[in-house]
Length: 415
Length: 140
Image (cartoon, rainbow over all chains, first blue to last red; front, side):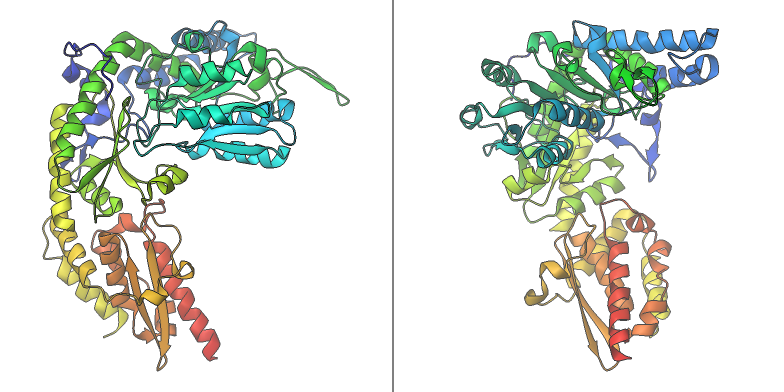
């Protein structure tokens, strides 16, 4: 468990915050909703919901295309959102922030485009054993296409990367390393600065899957010196269908377009087409305008509360949940890295995770069960799946108490 | 008893239960009572795809009737499977193929028929009908 966080109690007014999220007032089978599936998607505050309505009521118009007033307003709002996100990540340039459909789309973009430009037969791409399928499959597809090799950083029984093995994988053939910042199944915070440091000594760029990081811990792309970073809007309290690819301009400028179409062009003739500069070169077609703008609203909301405050409070939740669940007989926590964030996965000996999930659901408690899109990771642990509890800053210790009671009751019924 | 008579019997049994937890306690109990599939049939080719839990299904054809045995590594799934086996096993291929399983919905377990990845009840019912169809085709 991470110990380098301030020990003063959290200053967040959680009850006030909870009022910002209307869905938290829902009941499920007559019981109050206890939502512990934030790793799958997070709930939305009124600010974001109102911004969505406001967009379609007052602003809706296609962006970058028109001379009329509404189109100008929409474009301004769209680009303002990009600037907000660039500032949130501390990117050097706004044009290093590309709007995508999500994390999966962003990784596919890099895999395809970077692969086409830089990866040749016999080259290597490195990923880790704990990756989400979205940070495995695009690389598999690209490696097969480019006749390159995919190599995997192994993990130990705590769910930490084996860094000695990682170092041993770095050779002249490696063209890129793609790794999770925070594991969606284990909660492990990977030593990404160390990974990037070693990679850069070999002139290898690094892509970080930050889908489970940006909402929990401060992320500064310049401080990390990361080459590519991706995340999803819907996991940071924004709308679905929007994601961000951050890329250093030195890399993005060398990469060919991913999708062709409107917006990403300078000039089109039937013989030849020239492409736009960053960021538009990678934003073909009409974007999910409302989601782009309202992601900015979500980032504002989170920044107002403050990621450091969120980090500290969620750390308290994670510690409390770990303490309450560890005492349940036959319960084993999967993922016991020294540095963890946001997520607690467990199994109960002799009980299938699916069964636990169904019964918790009937108590109004939403968790996720199964392989969490990390089948290779499940194989490493030799288990069919886990029950995953994933936190947000609107969860409470009282909810964790209910969770622990629910798990205890479910296990009693199932054994 | 006909397939529908068995379904009605099940619906009747479940009507005794007040809340969800009582229903699931019963489903878990049924799961514990399911006659197990023979170990030799717990092979990959007998696995029902589309489940979070593993479900093995085996079909035997005897005296013009199809008999099913099944197992699962998740107890609730096993309970649900045991109900479907109780309803469909021991009937003719034609009866099985033409059956409509309304009891799952009537018992209030409709979510288990949804197309999320988490359950394979639908897949299992489909597979049972496929087995019935195959046996029927072989017999003709």
